[in-house]
Length: 267
Image 1: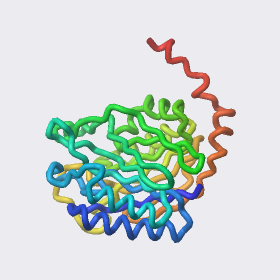
Image 2: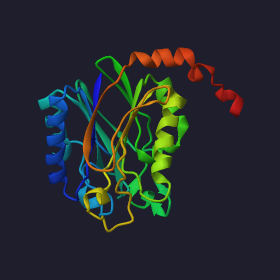
Image 3: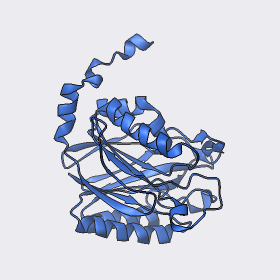
Image 4: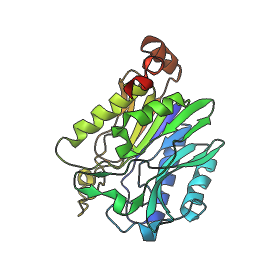
């Protein structure tokens, strides 16, 4: 399966970001991809009031993404913000195309490194998997990558490829943590992990003027044995990788961490 990672640099305007997503999708389709993974906050970057930009899953932004997915024959995964009942928003992945139409609300909110995502964002309450073209996909968002039990649960629920849109916060050691965590979660789950980050604004001379997590780039595709099969730098770009799904079964035969785990012994 050919998977494209669109490392975008989102602006504050949902309309402008939708137009950029359309351009990225066209390039991905031209390169033969059947899946396009875009970052967390692809709809609008962090560091702005999120309530005014949030839209329901049947709103114009999500409908636009569905049309793009259908036009290019892609499964598209992209981060957006949807209204939550308590007045906050939810940090949502729209997952649409190739017979799939679902969503994932970020479970673990980024209340760390001096940032408090939960002040404005309500957490999700369900683990999400989907099947497209016979491949099992799992979904996680950014800070979720620090929680290995989610990735194990996704693997146990049928995921072979876990897609992780992100808008990683910058700072000392943060790139190293990102790369280590993505590779570790592939090993924990013996899944392919496709991690799609927001590009680093500083890479194009666009200082964000905010302490919010606006991205560092360095998107990665990692095999079930933790091998980096493709990566980008800090700037916007498109990464296209042929993911050999059959390697999941081979990895789980060689290193059966899912079969060997003993969760009852931990209690």
